[in-house]
Picture (tube, rainbow, N blue to C red):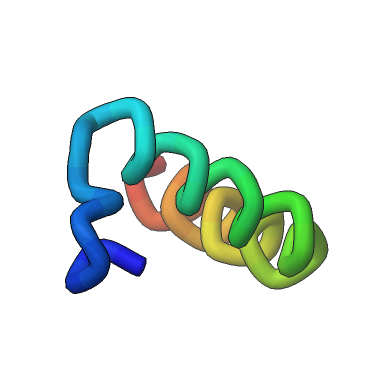
Length: 39
């Protein structure tokens, strides 16, 4: 999509939000791992 001119900050944020919603369990595991690593 970005190569089709959808590269504004709002477009990118929309892509990110959509990806996170579609992959929520994976994203949550990454956040959990990152939080554990900083302790």
